[in-house]
Amino acid sequence: MSNQIEKIIGPRAPRGLEDHERRQFHLPNILLGIAAILLLASMFFPYWKMTLKAPQYPGGLSIEVYVNRMTGDVREIDGLNHYIGMRPLGEAAELERAVSLVAVAILVLLVLAAIFIHSPWALLLAVPAILWPFIFIGDMYYWMRHFGLNLDPTAPLSSSIKPFVPPILGSGMVGQFETVATFQIGLWMAFLAVALILAGLFYQRRAYKPLVESGQ
Image 1 (cartoon, rainbow, N blue to C red):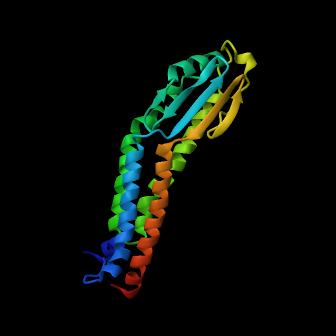
Image 2 (cartoon, rainbow, N blue to C red):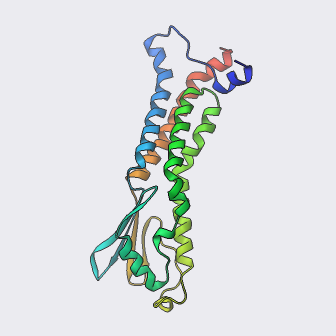
Image 3 (cartoon, rainbow, N blue to C red):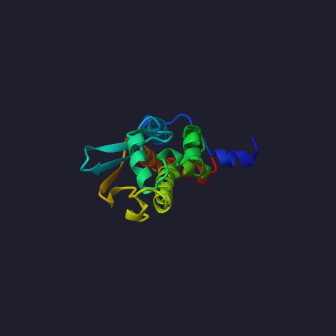
């Protein structure tokens, strides 16, 4: 194995360690492994939810956004949005939803690969997964803003609704309607995965840095 490859992979845990000494090398693996599982599982849960409240809808209308699809009262909300000139929700983030499952699967594999890389390269592998929930929120905000600020001026109620930016989190008003946006369990799982990844990388560095400095 060349020196360059050895530097990328990093040192291995010494053999013949006592149980209490071995734990410090197992801990980062466990944390990163749990993070990968959480990230993978998050794909099966909603990331974001919006509820539309109005007098004519006592129970409200809701949509839930997963990484690859939307569920809920999408058709009804599209019908209301049509009158104010907003495009159908299904036209938002079409590319992102098409590639999201593969993208998240790749993120999971990168986190798992970081378990076996005991050098600063582990952080480089994990960066995409660390950024993932923030990318999701940023992309959601972009499309909400784009749709809200580019209303069709020929829509029936276009004159009564000014361009707006729906809130990505919290409540807001659009005409007589109140919208309430909340982060859902899938996104919280992704954030928890980020916290575990950072903790795993911290403990990995603490365990293997002395070996690097000693030349083992």
